[in-house]
Length: 463
Image (tube, rainbow, N blue to C red; front, side):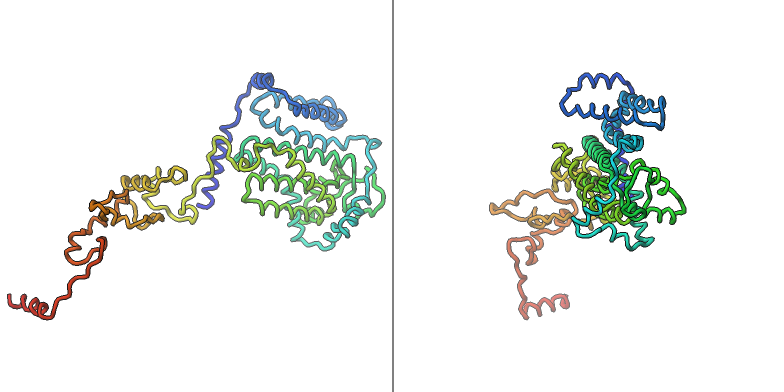
């Protein structure tokens, strides 16, 4: 039951999200929208996209000409079709970041700045009083290796897709566009900084010391080599040895991505705040433990993420609007006490009282008296499940209480079972016997004298 309910909600959200998609395959629809679009100064960013993408494709050597022309051709086709353009247009900054990261290795060496080896460790010692990253790598253990590998070597590549999927399912499309632009521009800026200011990572200092670096040196997996050994593979050794950006220590895009993910999830799903920032803290440690970044790199990447998150956040996604569901998906449904505590719901509530469940889900339209009438007119209800709302007076006595004018006060609507119990008690009959639990006062029955008791005792015997 605890698993089925979330799965049902995800399924309903998926159906609603698919229903919101533009399923048109006609390029003419896209061209019509382009003609009707009102251009603003912010649209000039697309000129920057075109210029930067043209530069990277021009210097790209693998794939060579003319195969590399398929990249802009396929992308243009995806932009023309409405069904694909609704994904490819917002994801433009992410594609531009990936293109920049890959094509950076084709920049001629004579145009590349000289990598710095001593800058980052010096800054770390000056700012923090010690080489913190070096201290964290002194003690290693297989358990610590796995704990660092999961967020650094797996989560970094998987969680961005998970965040995008949850935002697509449970939040408006503007939130998904915000995620694509903030995540894409942040990583693009980080790659450009790494190209302009190349710096060596801690693994270089451990292998080569502080000797000057050049671009003939290949990358290293650092502490992830222990994971390759543990898994009997060479995945990370191969990947980092062929990295396009060998000297891309500052800023840490691993730390930047984790910070951006934590900011997004905590903003749009506030109930997860402590968990996502706990994950980010573990990844901060992992970047230094695996000898891929200095502490100053982690701080720089986190600051980069915070800056892009708040600078690019649109006004309509601030405040309470951040948790509003998208169109076609209702707000978080009401959970009854039976669902919360995983109890079997009574038959009366599962069967004929479905309308009551709808009333319970709408707190503003909820009316106790109307709900009572609906249940009374429906099928029999187990009276062991009583209403938590206590009336001002016992509902069984309400029809029999007399007002100051001598007439019975109008009875309020009540539950059929309670009223039927009250109807069994007759005030006149109980009053004649000397007591009444519902009268204006309580009268004790007269105590018979000894003579009266003796006469009453002899009467039956004489007869």
